[in-house]
Image (cartoon, rainbow, N blue to C red; front, side, top):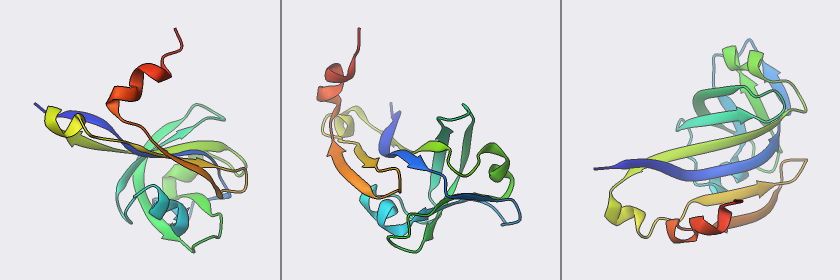
Length: 131
């Protein structure tokens, strides 16, 4: 059996724009993509912390170190400049793969620069429980 688990996350990005007329996707600073191990055209889930919207689209690379995080196409209706978003990728893994899997979490500053890169495995999950 395989389980779908978090592969990587860009945490607390700020939307720099929303381009309704673009064909689709989310443009993300190439430096952020590399840090989170997100490939161009890879499926991503975007969670808008500011308004609660969630969507699935694909990532495209914006110029490196530009700070660009922009919703494109129909997705542009689900966010506005200044909204805070979390961008995640997932992978399907076997129990054997899960035993050593460490998701990559990239914490991002208000201007979409890398603040910190963390990795933690399933064995560390108990440390995230707040109850």
